[in-house]
Length: 413
Image (cartoon, rainbow, N blue to C red):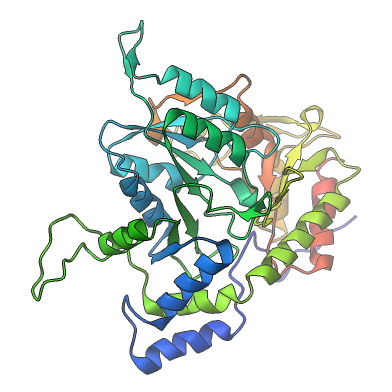
């Protein structure tokens, strides 16, 4: 089959506007509420809290800001240990270092690609608050940062039970999973403090921004206070605590307010894309990112995993500690086989965007020296080596997606 380069780019995931957003942004301008207070902020917080089913929601400048304030609410301080999902974007782990705490990365499991409860249990047994034979003190973890990767809920019941057993605060990084449910309950409500993202490529967007979610109204109010530079209620500027410039503006909250009207529509379209890939690849040496039967993902990104026996040789050793500036990988083409980098480069030739799976945090040079706990095989590294995020843009037509599917299959000829 011969392919023609797409005239318009087939995106991984782009913002999709509907028109309602402009009406609410115009309202902010017309009423002159263009700063960090206004009806758009109030209604966005109210709408999200009602949708997910939590009592407190605080609109912020980024999902990263929400994670940072969640850690502060959990009273994470310098020297504390936070157990963190290993396969994720660095924005999950970075806020841990803002508070000078120590991230310990937990490997994935294969059923959802998320944090492995077995590895988490192993980490708690290791970090027992005692001095070990190596002379090192292993502090009891203060919190667990759990990610729902690519919109797929993790094994929340098991992970939450382990956190409760050891007295650790569970924080959900639900940046990618707004609208996804675990046993009928929305992600972002299982942890004590949680975060969602409205980045440009997320299931709905405010162009940027995020939100802290919690059932503790007092904690939500505290986070809102911190997000506006911790200004006390005096006639003059008076500060008793360090604050942050984290509050979302009423203008971009208007974008989110309009987007929220279309959240279920976006999820349905994302699911259609996932199922079309799954059907299209049923006779190919690839599988789609998995999820459990008692969950309903939001299908934010559809990702493929190449069967081990269908992998050609792929070398990513040039990228990393040995050569931090390198951006290329090498692979050896082989009949009947392929690899993520070959497929990604082939798709790019035809104006189709794809992206590698998140490189595990314990392999990132910036986190060199941080501990990493696995239950056995390094599952996260294997998924990184064999996986690829496919275009999941809801403006992609079924016909365009069919071509993308054929392009991927072509790489295995």
